[in-house]
Amino acid sequence: MKIITSPAIPQENYFTVSAIAPVLEHDQLTIMTGEGARHGWGRCRVTSTVICDTSDFIAVYLAWQHKRYGSLFGGHAWRYYERLEYRWQQKVYKCLTRDHKDHLAALWRAGSMPHGVYAPSIKLV
Image (cartoon, rainbow, N blue to C red; front, side, top):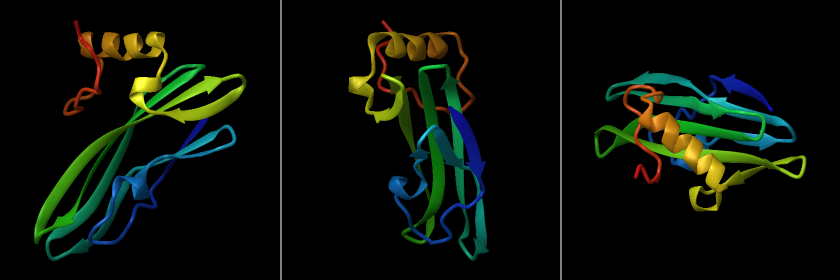
């Protein structure tokens, strides 16, 4: 799948993960990474990191910060995509194949995740 990075992040003081989630169209995934305009409280930031990109599985880690209650507030989320029957589909973690869950766990155990990335809901046992 072709992955494109867009600097067009929300400029609002507040936004939800749905506003910055990757967009899947046909065989193209658009992710957002960038900074918003400067405000008195700081600036919005979004970082989308592709953690795994194989021929049939993509895992993207999202981290962001925006204004909440007068100060910076941040969050994080995961988005997963599997290629099934010649078509890419977004999946929730519990619906991933065992192989893909094991692959994520192996990356985590090997220390291959970037610094600051929170573990997905994986069993490390």
